[in-house]
Amino acid sequence: MEITLNTEVECADGIVGRSTYLIINPVSEEVTHLVIRSNQRPHTERLVPSVWIAQSSHDGIVLSCTQDEFEEMEPFIETEFIKVDIPRYTDGGFGWPYVTTSYSQKREPMQHMNIPVHTRELRRNTPIMATDGRVGRVDELLVGPANKHITHIVMRKGHLFGERDVVIPLSAIKKIEDDLITLNLDKKAIGDLETAPIHRHFTSVRV
Image 1 (cartoon, rainbow, N blue to C red):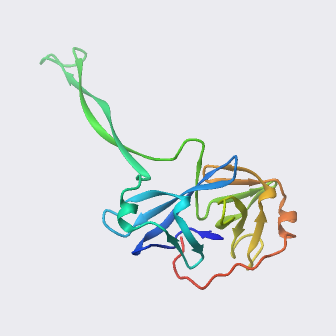
Image 2: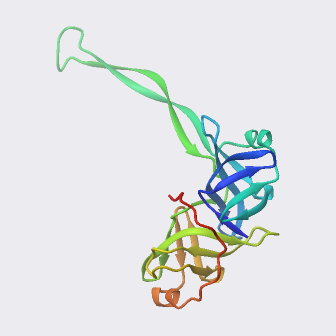
Image 3: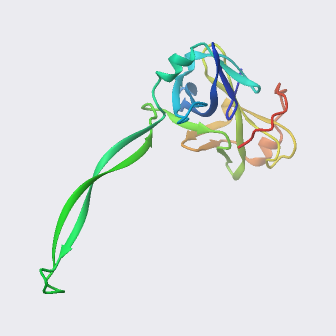
C-alpha cells in the first residue's frame, strides 16, 4: 500500500482534506497516525489513527470514518498560552540612573505539534542521508496494509539518480529522526538498487 503526502483524502461521506504528515514509531517502523489538513476553514490539521486508513494510493487516501468523526479527532497543532513578564521602567522624574523596574504579565500564544510520545513526524520532501551525504528526498512510503509497518521508502525523479523512482528497503534505514532519514548505504549502493513499479497517475500538486 502506498501512502502519499499532499494528496486528497476522502471520508466515507465525502472529501475532507489533504494529507500533510505521517507520524511513525521509529523503533517499530510502524505508521501510527496520518495528519490531514481539513478543507473547511480554519483548515485545522488533525491526527487520524492509521487504523482509519481504508485505502491508500498515489491517487488519494480513503478513510473509514465520517467527516463528523474526523472533526472530533485531536488537532495536530495545539496552542497554549504562557505568561510573559513585561518590564516597565520609571525614573520618578529624576532621570537615569535613578530608574526602577517593575513587571506586569501578559499571556502569549505558543503553538506546538501534538506528536504522540515515542513517535516522529515525517513529511513529503524529508531529506534522505546516505553514509556519504544527502541523496534525495522522501516522496512516499510503502507500508504493509495489514500492520501499517513501513516496508520501503520511495525517492522520486529529480534526485541524485535522475529521472527514476528509487525504492529503498526497510533494511537500508539506519535511523528515522524528525525531518531526516539516515541510511546505512552509500550513494553507489543506493544507485545500484533496482527500481520497483509504483502505480501512480500524473498529479499537478506538489510541495
